[in-house]
Image (cartoon, rainbow, N blue to C red):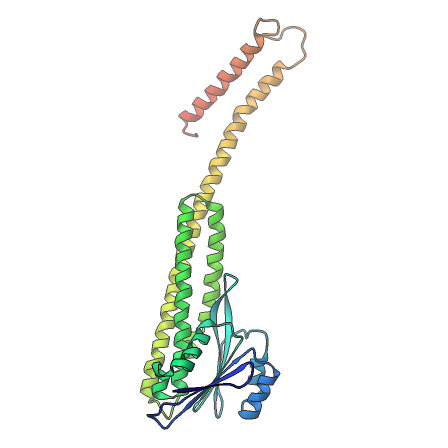
Length: 321
């Protein structure tokens, strides 16, 4: 059973209360935190001002962080989301204490909102309903967010397959654009995910009066496994994209080489013909061959044509064509 309360426009509260236990857990979900939300937290809880100011900041923190205070734990984590067909970083601040968990974000993380709605309507289907521990709730939130990363990785895999098809259908210019987009996505994902493993390993040391330390370690080790799997998939995708890029560059260079070869052969053939035409175009009164000959023009054209054909045969023999 869970009790939902809309405290203000940007603050929602769920109280998870399992009748079989004596405990209860409060989850405060705060979207687009402003001065009013910070004022509410300062009045109700004894959080450090520097942590509240970090939640109020409109700019995204440059790195993930975890800080143990006397009565609570403060965490900053980043997770990838789609924004205008690009993968960008979304930030969540967590305040965790006994029987309390607060999430502060910009309302741009669908996986977090979906899980909040699940806890609001069907809390008895969640693991946290069994334990009513903020440590377990944090585990479930992080698991949902990490599982959502696999969806983004699948999108990358689909895009890689499309790029491969584009490359081998000889659409090199289109493939260049696709590969650049893939590189951008993979770089962003790596930047966002790279600190998760170390942060989660620190969280394994958390203590709870409700959940045994061994059980906490078991739960959070699953999160570490997720981060390892995600990183390995990203490494494989990075190597695949680099291989596709090298293949595309080779095909593009081959295409350019063929164009340059064709233009060079054309220039080599035209140069002597231009010289020959210029030579017969000299304004000389006498002594110039074919000037006074019947059909002299066609004789000159024939000579030039035969010369061009001989050069083509020579290039063919040398296998330059």
